[in-house]
Length: 81
Length: 190
Image (cartoon, rainbow over all chains, first blue to last red; front, side, top):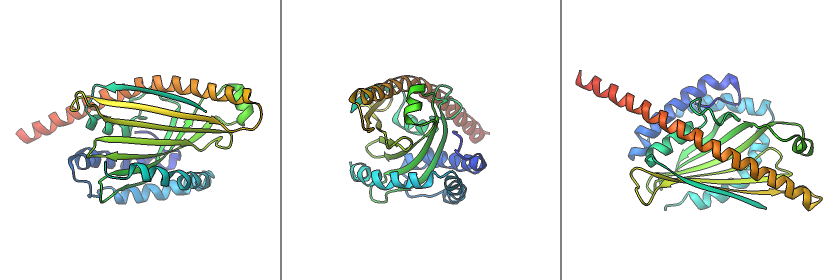
């Protein structure tokens, strides 16, 4: 799996990524889309990552991009096909 | 604005491709070494459609031509914001990304799709890629054109090695998943 931008988050990221991939291939793709096996791991990973993004000053530029482009793509791709 | 587009067909099922896509930038891919970080910012499943929505931050260490560096500022680390949608019913992945670094002088918007191929849907997957590149810096059109052309050229190079790298990941994924399945079978029989 790819590394995190923050080396201190690599361990928890690796655990989360492994959990997600297992959930994705064994549950999500087989129709069990509502299960949420990796929530706790993701919470811990996100806690570590958010701190790192803030320290590196990436958080505000990321927030701007999220605000400006996600509503547009959500409207196009988050609907029933 | 310049547009770069490309496409190809992978000889793997959509399930395999969409799974391997999450580990596209792992050590199995020795081609896309310019990607140094992939972090997931948010992830959720839309309850009414089952569509998986993921936001990621991709961090790259690019070798950039010196003249571009002096124009855009002296950093070789760049960040990309990516939002993706997996539609498990239509069997389609759409990934939209935009550059965070140098965004005041250059806008790069890329859309990538992986969908079940119409000819042999159970065994092959169609890939499309389109990037719209616009130089925003004021000043001479000549310089803008040069910046856009250099960006398109870099896209072309990355697209080629990106495909080769992803092929390697697909091959390894199939092998490893196959081995896991065999192990499980053996365990069941024992």
